[in-house]
Length: 72
Image (cartoon, rainbow, N blue to C red):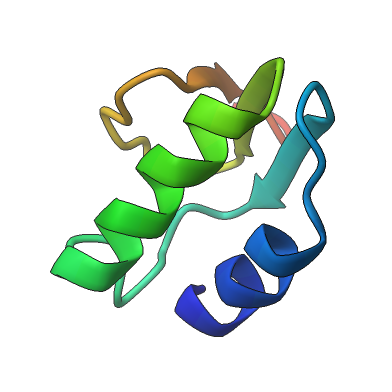
């Protein structure tokens, strides 16, 4: 996700709303540079939402939404 976050960070304006839709299985989300980008984006944006269908992460200043897909 780091590459996408770098592109987002370059275009992000103060007050923008950021929503990431994912299954949550992100291999580089615990890497220092990825964590730094997530934090910088959360600081600049007015709202940050991490919508996941599978793996949840505790992301500072991000609202996590678990989306149920399929039937139990």
